[in-house]
Length: 437
Image 1 (cartoon, rainbow, N blue to C red):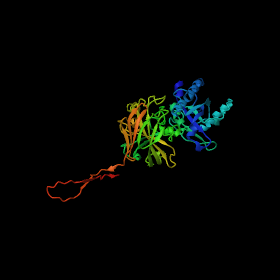
Image 2: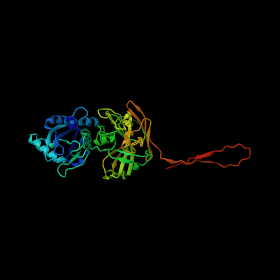
Image 3: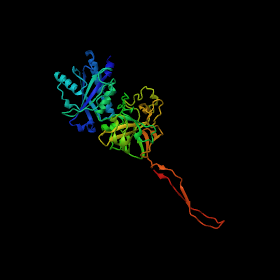
Image 4: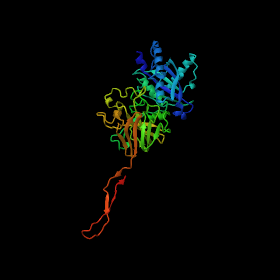
């Protein structure tokens, strides 16, 4: 069955640049991106019958370069606010009898077959290379992401993201995003947040269920933090993304190509962030942090699709509410642990879905609702969702005074001696004895 076969195609993606230090730079992502796609097969991931090759090549071409949704080119063009586009060539299929999951070996052998067919391609003329191969469930690599970072030991620096799985289109979009410098979007579940320390929150790596950079298996758009990583949202342009601690702002949908799309609230340094995670990969060390506030309104070719699927928890999903405001914590290690931005969406309604506990599914209803707010006792900051307008939602930031200890006021009056029956006026002094914490 061609449909089932094509849907199991998976990808490895390479980005080639002259120096390792230039990887993940937003400037490299701007403009047209010439991309080479090689469709291959090897013993663990065999090619279909030769009679099916034309249909396979057609489907792979549509999945990557198709002008209409859903395709990788269309997804990137829409999410980049039309700043990045993809074009290129698709060649294959190529059978590599001694091939393996080694990306570079497969590319080298596929290029040899290309040259044998008089296709004298200059690999350096492409900014990205995608390797597409067919691994049906139960064969080949693991059905989940594997090696996400790999650099060649010699020659021009190259960055690879290899993946394998059943849903190729989701994985294609997800893994390609890594070549743009976009990281996973995590989820923080805090049992008694707000007011609890962020250090006590449970961390779920990659489990922001409302972006393609999570295991949601849906073609959902990027967050503001991720668009900043790719260079599509400018933190230095206050018309797009503004840093503030007080004031009232009209926030446009993150899906819009104009207007204020992100409000950032400085947090400061958090020491030993996520330091208790049993998985040492997600212990971030000391981080510089800020809150990122976005408004998501399903629109366009991707966020207008079914956001929540058909799971048991779908009725709780924030996207059943058209005006969903999310607060994320943006962190960047100040040491070498993870020297890039990481997006951690906060669940604003912890423990609200019965039967799931503080799991990733509890984030399904994690947005701030209309007329509600969020308060952080640690930095004395309130974020309030006031109302919606035709242009977006109205967000109020309040830089609260420091918390205080309430005490009875001190009342005193001047002592006076007067004859009995004489009228007298007293002046009282009331002193506020509250103590600022």
